[in-house]
Length: 102
Image: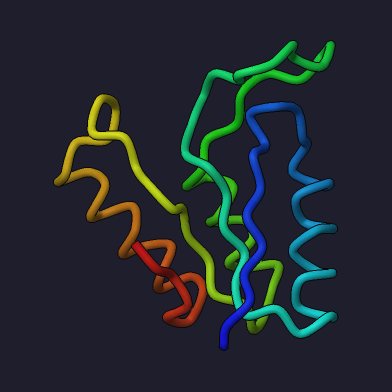
């Protein structure tokens, strides 16, 4: 059985907070760290925090983590065209040493 962490940072989370969660994910033996691929939140936004981009965040985590797999559960086709998405995911996968799931 694989155990994975899923986050919803569009509800208010900084990169440093997501990195901390990803590090705890690795340290406690979880297999993967996933984040949503949304720009708009569903609840009241936290003051001072704007939206973050899923693949930009995952690119940073690719360099700042060592073991956990990385990805999004769903990628909206409304703002992710297939060609640019493929290039982005391939780059993040290379940055992570082959740990990305799409």
